Length: 150
Image 1 (cartoon, rainbow, N blue to C red):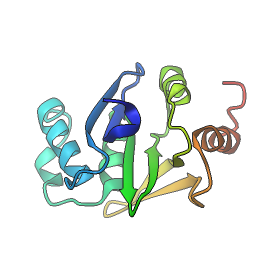
Image 2 (tube, rainbow, N blue to C red; image 1 turned 90 degrees about the vertical axis):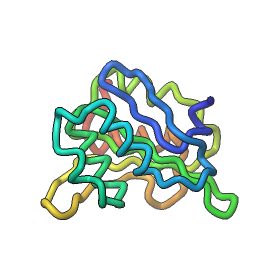
Image 3 (cartoon, one colour; image 1 turned 180 degrees about the horizontal axis):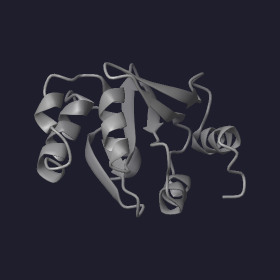
Image 4 (cartoon, rainbow, N blue to C red; image 1 turned 45 degrees about the vertical axis):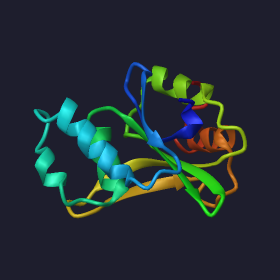
């Protein structure tokens, strides 16, 4: 499967990609992540506490605490767009992996700087206007984080 065809992807701190589902399938994004957490990280935190959770940002936050970048891919009425959720700190390998992705003209947003309030998570965003392709979103992210040297 190509990256742009997956519904959900995780990028670990080494830059390895784990893709799940197909972008147009009817399965909820969080269902894939709940299964992944149960199989791979049940010892890291209380996975059953997420059983009733449906908010994608909450899953992205929890996976971010484990060092993952989370990508949600969506197709809605023929319009394809994706959102990357970055943890507070991303590795050089993760950044290089994201930069190397070929998502063509898919519109991309990046959510970053998560703040956890217990019952919800707030992320800052770039590309939320629906006008950014991946390269533009990365450039805006690096500018906002003052990471131009990367």
